[in-house]
Image (cartoon, rainbow, N blue to C red; front, side):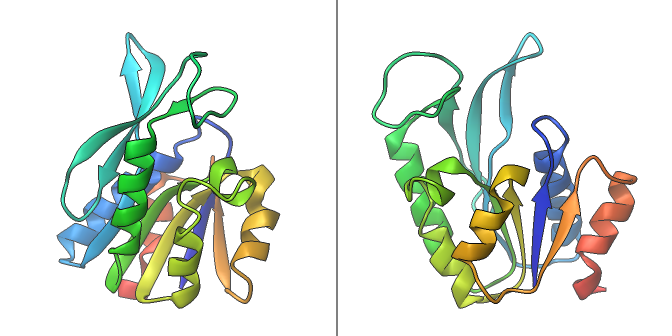
Length: 173
């Protein structure tokens, strides 16, 4: 089963994924994949980190700046070595009970960079449940990249966090 978590920037997509992970671990599920929490300084987002769900390792993924770099989006300069590490983490994540991928964005779905290999991992389906963060503007591109999946979409902001987590983890009830 595949769940797509979507919503505007700052709506709580990563927070929802973190809560899904916490509850899945409490149920002793085999959890793997990557989460991309914001790095804050004085309440301002200055970058993004990358968290390996299975091993607990964290590395800096991107900086919110305008400095040149080999991999950039409008707002972020990505660390190529962390992108490569994240791709390896995703490639090695399955089989597992819960696969988390936060997020598949323009690098993957528009440019074919970043963690584009995650699309193959999702197509193979060697997991019981996958929760993937995708921006609203990229939902169609994601569906085209992973055709034939019967994905359930959770849109934020939504209802109470606990109810959304229960809904996502329903297959493990």
